[in-house]
Length: 136
Ligand code: DAT
Ligand code: MG
Image (cartoon, rainbow, N blue to C red; front, top):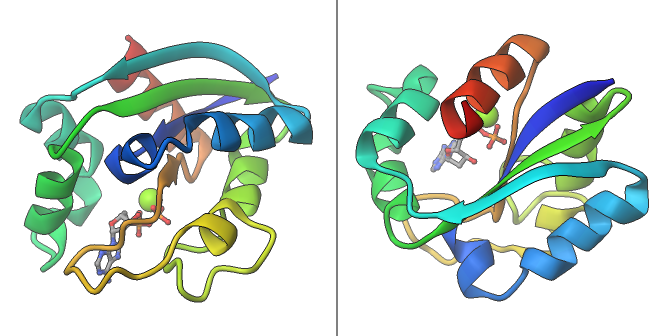
């Protein structure tokens, strides 16, 4: 069994999409192993997004993630890391495929950061690091 970190970002929480997004995870067959709704600190977010430090969208991304509570979810299942990213869709919500969380439920609001509802770990190494950060 594998586990991944899923975040429902502040846009998803504010838009009352927690139920819809978790429903899609469960309907796909993955298992919710832990849940935590809270406002992460700047230092947690900077560590979480460390790979993007120095990029032009880094500070807007952190500010967006500080704009309200996030739901952190430990999601489990065989190949869930790959599988959740597949049901989430690609990063840019405008072009994310229909049928995915981002493709069906998100769009570009014309802000300088992509408000794309969810985060999912991108590798086993990231999942272990991120689960420790958010649930450790
Ligand atoms: P993902 O969340 O699909 O793994 P990522 O790790 O490359 O994407 O980027 C993290 C977040 O940063 C992403 O969900 C939204 C934001 N972001 C990424 N690229 C961006 C860009 N070119 N402009 C604005 N925001 C961006
Ligand atoms: Mg990423």
